[in-house]
Image (cartoon, rainbow, N blue to C red; front, side, top):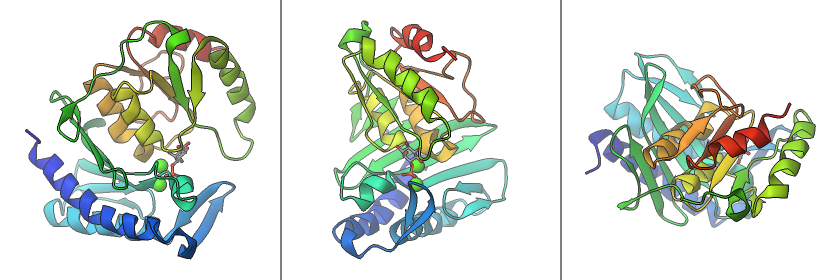
Length: 258
Ligand code: IPD
Ligand code: CA
Ligand code: CA
């Protein structure tokens, strides 16, 4: 049974999801601004986030909020983390791989979260100790053991900051795996690792709102999360490696070369 907090997140996400669906049908009319090279925000991001905050504030008026578009709202030790549209570039281009991400963090630990793709009507949720789920189906990471059978997801950086390191990492993974996917929503990528669709995923320089729910989905689906060098991942870290347990050490070996 879904915990109460997930029911409330679902209510907020499904209400805001209707705004996203409406705007997705009219992408040609979107107002788009560029935050930096390749990093866009649309009026849909702003409207969706406003709607999520409005619903959640009714139930959790005293909590703290960390949001991508409205910044931080200071409150008590419970924190809600929001990415209104994860996959804005996909959204702008009419590609239906987008999601709303809402998570709850207490004492620097993600305890509950949802990822919702309103266009494909996929509702993922996880709560600590209660498993990972999508539309009432329990999720398990894949059980592929050999990298040459595996599809590995990643994200590519905007601009040229860490681009060269990425080329080396891509080279290492492409040589030994069944292929790489760059799907464009880090949250959904992690949900796909939890679902056993992708066998692993790595990306650097992410924000907590991109991956908050995703890390809980993966661990609750029996997978493993770490930094790229295999060290423990904490909510302060921006680089992430996720996979099933069989592959994790092999992936660390390939990705911790620098
Ligand atoms: C982005 C997506 C993308 C990842 C970027 C994120 P946004 O989030 O998750 O897959 O590669 O690093 O910034 O900007 O669409 O919310
Ligand atoms: Ca994001
Ligand atoms: Ca976003």
